[in-house]
Length: 375
Image (tube, rainbow, N blue to C red; front, side, top):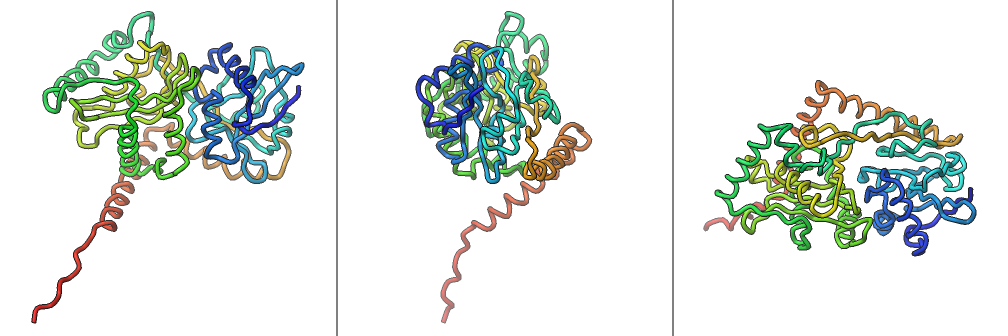
């Protein structure tokens, strides 16, 4: 096995075509986060982005996109943003993990949404987790039919709220592939406000993430296209989603709604309309991403499994990295896996988010200067 390392923008058209071919040959690699276009997008804003190309008999047969940090600490490309990670390869290809890491100059390789079929990484997996998905044509019928039969109360309530939204605000309409960048900016503002309210890290406070989303919005390729979907009431956007899609898979990535309209459940309407429209545009699967959320339990038709862990070779840096990262991950996973712990943690984060938002608003309030004294 010959292994060479390249920057994403150094990949030749022939290598990109071979990568696309490997995606097409295996359904588990059809996710747009595994496309060379996503790796190239990250590479525009992250200097450590690399791609390992595996060759057999001179022919490229596998591609591992990753990010290399100081001291040879590696991570799956877009770790923390990507909901699907893998060494994309042609069927039947095997590799030696230590040799792969050595060729990449890595002491450790961290992943958290690894496709479970990656057997050579198996000994390095520390846990597997459910990743809910929507089959947009479950059982050969439509997703709307499946939802009505599975959750009749939810479907009826959502339809009732949609009619009320149309009466109160304006006629409800949906655009699957909106090309207005101003609406993308609106989505980012909504999402930032949501992150702050719930005490989470505001991803859109990081310029490289904003840059990546802007870049992907302009990508229009077969294996990776940035799709902005918008729910309107009249001319007013009330909910929006942005995520990449391949020919058959749409990744649910950033969804948010107008914070002035929560009583209408516009976020849930958004997900339902997106799944229905995706089916009409050739998508067969909507990947909701790893995570226990009530809305995902309602929307999913089944679950995939993804793995997290640390592939490592004997090296002091690898040992130190695992000793630092593994307890943090373990604590987070324990909290997320137990509602008795997760719910109090969510309340604490929301309280912190409320206090932080109020403090920020107070700090940015412009106070009038005292006027001149009389006399």
